[in-house]
Every structure is written in structure tokens, then in C-alpha cells.
Image 1 (cartoon, rainbow, N blue to C red):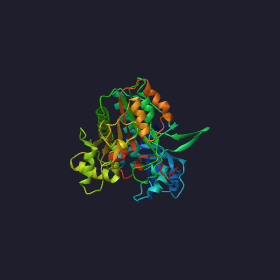
Image 2 (cartoon, rainbow, N blue to C red):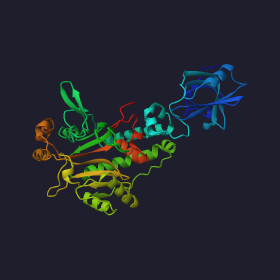
Image 3 (cartoon, rainbow, N blue to C red):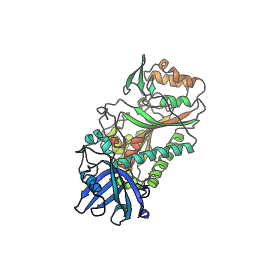
Length: 438
């Protein structure tokens, strides 16, 4: 026999008919029908049908098939044969089946079984859950999203940077910080790269972005909160107003979602998901007007209050009726915003924004306070000790251009784009208040 050509479910085709091939994957299904046996092999790209007529294959092949357990890893070598009834129009008639790793039985959960499995069971056995094509499709799309973000921002002259994840102080206060011992000192896991990306604005690296982990010690058991997530942050200098930031984020989101519509058709089909590029330009709603719109639905909310999850949902329904999936909410009360957000002079509001997608915040940001004296005043007004932030403040004392930026939750973007019920579906191994393993 000539040397077999390696193939997988993506590369095997009727053009291989008559050729010796080898395929590897998981034994998804085994059916013994007396005179003929079928083995369905699954790999990352799909499935391959192995057809074993008892009279045409060696007895040892039938013996292996007879004792094979589902989800075992196998290598099948044989002759490809055009077959209209097989997926892809081709099957493999085996000359040998090698069991590379036998799967124990029973399985902790089914892979293709049409039986609902509890979320906790799935996350406890994530290695098995991710064998399901629909679970893998989410992460293939997420990977595309990250590539599309990088491609867009690089094209806009942004430089990708990486800032520390072990830090001496938090950017947004201590209530949601994870504390850890760092040699002889106390340190924290970074909530965001906020302070560092602002410091970079004073260096001449005037457009930067970072995609990396962020940590929030939030005691929230919701479908939108986790303790560790991927944050997409950006900062740009020499802006004329907050609108310069909105422009970059909006065009980036349009590029990313448009790229998924264009390039992720197989994954979207697997998920039975339909993605639509939002209408642009995105509507801009001032915070005061947003509160009034939510009040109009009968929900009790006062000026100065956070919209909250229910308020965001109510506003999302209003905007959906108007034909908008994405929209800006701008100029929140300065009291509710961190010290680094610039106040809107003469008002109790600030140059801040949220980007909401289908009734959920996915991004926030604003114009930063770049004036040293005003920044120190804001720190003191928020009850912070400026001396604890000297490493950060020094960058403002020696020439800091006007700048602004954003943070965007990658998993939230993917969740809302695909209409997934829980953000944990977009995280390989989720971390929340109760889940630390696997």
C-alpha cells in the first residue's frame, strides 16, 4: 500500500476517491448493523464517515470497531470513496483503525446527544463541553473579533501595548480589587490599564491599545458579570473633544461586526445565529434624556441614579423600536465617575460616555482630565491621597496633552452580538464568585 495522505473533515473531498488517506479525531458515533459498521469521526472542522462492510475489511478492524467507546481518539487509514449519502460526499473504507486514546465510560456529559445539560455540569467538564461544535464556534468567532480589533486599530496608527497586571493601587477604588501578597508588599490585580495608558499619552506614543485580562472582585452572580475578563482598552492624545474618542470606537465596532458577518458564516450557521451590522452613526443620548426615557416606561429612577441593569434594558427596548442596536449615553454626573474623567465646566456633569449594545453597556470612557492641578483636586474630592499616585501624577506635571479613551468588554461584545444568554459562554474557563476550577 502506498503511503496514506493525511486528511481531515475540511480537506477530504470526493476528489480523493480511490486514494489512500488517513484521518484522525474523536469517535463521535459507532453503529454496528450486522453486515456493515459505521464510525463517525469528529475533528475541529466537522465529521468524516468511516464505512466498514464486514466482507471487505479485515476482521481485526471489525474487532476494534466492536469494542470502541464513544469519544475515543482514533486514527483511521483506508481508501476514500465518493458517496453521495455521506457528509461531504465522501467516505473512508478502513484498512486499519488505531486507538490513540480510549475514552472511559460513561461520559461525564454528551457531546452530540440531544439532551439538555446543566450549565454547571458543562463548566465543570469544560474539556468535554468544548468538543461540541456550537461551543467551539463561539471561541472561533471571539478569536476573529480580537484579530479584527487589532487590524482596525493598527490601520488607524495605534500601537499595541501591554501594561502590568500586578499593581500597587487601583484605578477605580478598592471595593472591587483583588489583593495579593507581592514579596514583602501588598499588591492588587489590575482592574484596568487605565493609569498606565494615560501615562503613555505623555511619552509621544499618542495612540495605544491593549487587549488583556482585567479583574474585578464584584459580588455579582449575574449573566453579565465575571471576576476575570478580557478588556479592550484604548487611549489617544491631542483630541479636540470627547467626540474624537466616540468616532474611533464606533468605527472600530462597525468594522469588527461587519467582519464577523463577512467572515464567520460557517460559525454563525453552527450557532443558528444572525448578526446584523448596527445602523450608524450611533444615536447620542445625554444622560438626563436617558433617565427621562427610562422614567417614561414607568420605572422609578431619579437624576443622579445609575441606570442599572433594568434601566439599560428598558432603554434598549426603546432604542430597538427606533431601529438602533448600538447607541451612546453621554455626560453622566461627574460624582458617579472616577477622578480621571474631565468635568463639564459649570455643570454637575462630565465628559463621559457608555456604549450600549442591545440594552447592555459594553464600553465606557471619556475625555480625561489632563491638567495636573485639576486632576489632584478631583482625586482629593474623591477621598483619594494623591501621594499614593505620584508614579501616575508625575506624567502630568511635565507636559500632558489632552487625551481620552475607553475600555470595552470583549466578552460582552461577543455575548450581545451572538445573543448568548450568559457571558460565561464566551469564556473558556469562567471565573466568578464561586467558580475557581477548572
